Image (tube, rainbow, N blue to C red; front, side):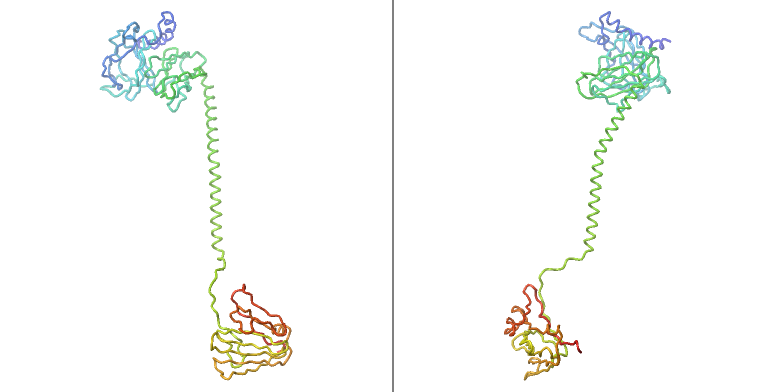
Length: 454
C-alpha cells in the first residue's frame, strides 16, 4: 500500500515544488548531490543487488544546502516504464535495489521530498544478470498509458523540435526531461485538452536524453524515448519555443512535412535522373548510328585505285587474213599511218621494236578499193618487211570514208613513226592526235574495209 502511494506523493511533491521554492527561496535543483557509497560500482548493475546511496550538499565546501528526506530513486528505463522507489531518510544510509531485467538501459537520479533532484550521472547504466533475478519486475505486456516520439533516428540536433505524443492516462500530465551529466531535470506540466508536446532541444551536444511522462494519479507512461544529442553549442534557438499541442494536429503537420520532404526528394531525383536518361538514350542512338554506318561501309565496294602503276605493253594485234603473208602480230612494233591524198592509196609502215627489227610497208587504195595485194620484201622472213596494197573495186560508205582519213600519231606516242608522226597530210586533211593527258593508250585501229555491200 505504501508503494502505491509513492507515485501520488511524488506527483504532489513535484507540483508543490515551485510554490515551496518561491516561499523558501530554495531552487528546485543544486540543493544536494548523490553518489554510490561504494566507489567501485561502475555503470554495470547486477540484478537484485542492493546498492548503498548517500547524499550530501551540492557545495561540499560551504555545506549550506541539503536534501529534505525522505529520498526516492527514479529510474527511467529506455523503452520501458519509469519506476520510483523509496530509498530511506538518512543522508548516509540509503539503499536501492536493482529490479530491472538484464539488458535494460537506465537513467538514474535521486529526488527528495520537495521534488529537488540530485543531478544525473555522466552516462547511462546497463543492467546485467546477477546472482538472482527473483526481484525483477517485468514490463507490462499491453500498456494502456504510452508515450511515443517523432524522432526515428534516435539523433536530435541542437534547437531541433522533439515531438512527444501521449496516449492514455489521466490529464494533466507532467513531463520529466532528463539529460546525462546534467545537474537538473526539466519538469513541464501539460494541461488538460492537450496530449502532445514539442520540446526545443537545448541540451548539450554529444550526450543522451530521455523524456518520462506521469499522469495526474502519478502513474508513468510506458515507452520512454531516448535520443543522442549533437550539433552546435549555441542554445539560444531564437524564435523557437517549446509548446503544448494536440496529437492529431501534430500528426497532420508531420505528414505535411513528410510529403514536402518526399516531394523535394522526388524533384531532386527527377532533376538528376532525367538528364542521365537523356544522355543514355543519346549515347545509345549514337552507338546504333555508328554500328549501322559501319555495316553500310563494309557493304560498299572499295573506291577505284587511282594510284599510278606501271604499264606493260602488249603486242600489236592485226586482223588475220587481211594482210598477205602475215599473222597479224607485229610483235613490239610501232606503226605510223599517213594519207597521201583523198583519192590515192593509204600507206602505212610498221617498224620493229628495235634496231634490225622487221618492218611492214603497206598502202590502202582509194575509197573504192577493197582488194589488196602483198609484195614481199626481198627477204620474206619474220625479220623482213612486206608491202601491202589495197586496190579499189567500189565506192566506200560514209563511215568507211571517214575512217580512211589520214591518221598521224602524236610525236610523244610510243608507236609514232619517226619520219611522219608529227606532220599533217599532204592535202591538209585533219589529223587526230592522242593527247598526253589521256595516259598510255594504243593508236586508233586501222581503217576497215567497206562491207556494207558484201
